[in-house]
Image (cartoon, rainbow, N blue to C red; front, top):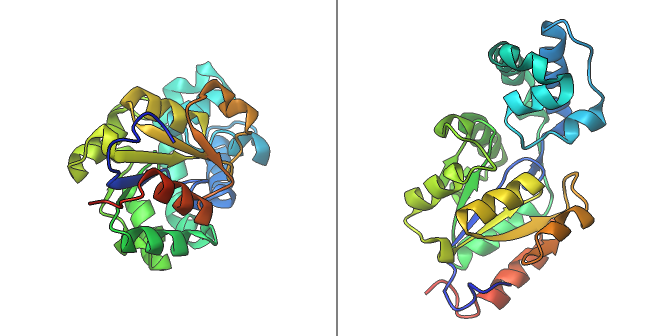
Length: 230
C-alpha cells in the first residue's frame, strides 16, 4: 500500500460521514434549517452534500459566501438545535460496516474515528447501531480548535491510542480527509462512498482507492500486514 509497509499496522482510524455512515438526509435538513434561520435561501441537496466533512463554519461560507462568516456561531447553534432532533434517527450505517469492524477487531486491530461531527452525536449513532464497542477512541469536532484538513484531530487520536504514524491507516471519503492524512504523514485509504470521484483523488498518487468500507478493505489491510498486529 505504501512505503510504510515495513512497519506493522496496529490501528485503523476512520472518518465518519460518508465513510462509515450516510447522514446526508438529516445534514441537508439541518443546514437548510440554519440557512432559513439566518434569512437566507435554502441550498440544494447536492450543494450541501459536497460540503459534508467540512466544519460547519466552512460549509456556511461555501454555501452562502464569505459575508456570512460573522453569522457562523448562530448557524452552528441553529444546526445543532435541529440535529438534536433528527440526526441520530435518520443516519444509516453502510451495510458492510458491521462485518468489517467485527473482522478487524477479531484480527487484533484497535480502531478510532476522526471527524468534524460532534463526538457525542457519533457515539449516539454508533450506540444505537450496537457498534460503539468496536472503537477505542473517537475525536470529534468539539475536541480540537483546528479542524480537518489540519492534522490536529488525527494526531490527537494517535496520541490517545498510543500509536505512531507508521502504525496507522486513515480511511476517508474526501479530499479533506486525504489532506488531513498527508498533513499528519499517515497512510491514507480513500473510499468512494461519498461525493468525491476517483479522478479527484489523482492528486494524491500514493494511496489505495476502494469502493467503500467492505471486505476489500480488510483484504488490503491483511496484504499490507500479513503477520497481523503482533
